[in-house]
Structure formats: structure tokens, C-alpha cells
Length: 282
Image 1 (cartoon, rainbow, N blue to C red):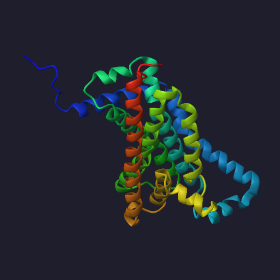
Image 2: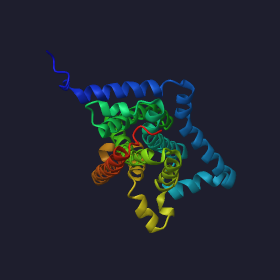
Image 3: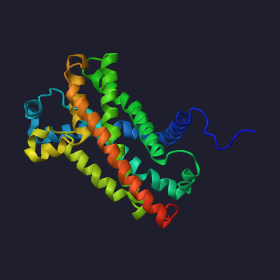
Image 4: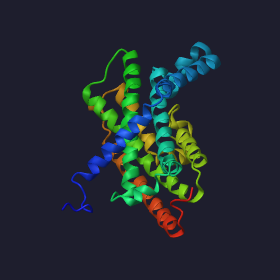
């Protein structure tokens, strides 16, 4: 007789595939919203370019090149917009995943399975990162093609790795915020505040050199800061001609740090929620 308590082979692979399929269905359910997300980096780029020309006139492009060292504002702003919107989606989705499960009445069912709950939420983050990466690949292809060039397969691989390393640490932040859901049942205010700080300190739309040293030091603790710098360098130069090993190492370290902190906070609140019977309290 088959032991029903025995774990199936490739349990975690099957778990990840099922989560990826679920996230894909949710991500593609509303086609209009999907196209809006894809268009937002370009919309924001044209907005900032329009503001620049309205303020400085025909000298706006020269001022932009002097201050940023980049000749194409469309390229600069679009890459920043891709990273900013990706990070916002990651933090908000990861922060709200537990709340959504609670509202659907499926959250406590995870504790009836042999799966590690933290791994379940991390798989959600990985699945969302992959989907976001696929969607914004179209934006990156368009903006690079408008510059009259295309990236090599190696450059695309490195650029994808950088975006992934920039997004995954945010899962740790989202995991910590999601843990607070067990206590306060509301995550949107905290997630929005965190997204505001990430958008302000990551240099998505302006060089961080405009800030004082203490602000730049704080910005260096964000993986999105390093991701935005590296991505612009790769798009403008080439992955093969860059010495970016140090920044990649920093991003890997930040990924581990944020994920470990997120796990610590989640486990602490999970233990408290179990002891007070708050897992099923909506």
C-alpha cells in the first residue's frame, strides 16, 4: 500500500512549476493592464523629457548629457523606468501575497501540506521575477533598437541576471512586510512607503551624485541602485568590456542579507501568530 505521508519525488520542482503557472494566469488575466505596465517606462520617459524641454528649451539635451554622461535621455529614463516599475511590482506583490491568500481563505491550507511556507513565498517571488523579466525584455529590446543597435546574447544574459539580482532581494523586504500582515492585516501603506524610498534612492531617473555622501551611502545598501548602474553600463557599452564583478558580488551579498532578514522576521511573526491563533484571523 502506498504511504500517503511520503513526499513525492521532485516535490519542490513541482511546487515551483505550479506557482509559476498560477502567477502566469494572474499576470495575463487582464491584457489591458499588462500592456499598460509595458508602456509605463516609455510614458514616464516622454514625461521627463517633456519637462526638461519645457524648462530648459533646446539646451535640455546638452544639460542632460553634461549631468549624466549619457547622450540618450530616452535610453536613460526607459531603463530607469523598467527597474522602478519592476521593483514596485515585486515589493507590492510579495507584500500582499499572504493577505490575498487570507482573503481567499486558502492561507491556512499551506500549513496542511508538507511544503515549507517560506519556500512557498520565495517561489512566488522567483516566479514573479521571471514574468516581469519576460515582459520588460520587450521594452529593453525596443529602446536599444531605437539607438540603432542590438545586444549580443551574452549582454542579454548578463542584463537579465542583473535585473534578477536587483529584484530578488526585494522579496526579502516583501517577506518582512507580508509577515506584518499576520498582525496588522494591512500591508499597502508600508509597501508604498518602502517603494517611495527605493524609487528615491536607487537613481532610476537621476545620478546619485546630486545627493550628499550620507544619502549615497544609504543608497548603496539597495540592490536596485547597483542594478540601475550596471544595466545602463551594459546597454551603453558591452558586458564583455566591463569590470563589474565587484558590483555583482555586492548584489549577491545584499540578496542573501535581505532574504535572511526577511526570513527571520517572517518566522518570528509566524511563531507568534501560531501561538495566538492569528493564522486564520482575517
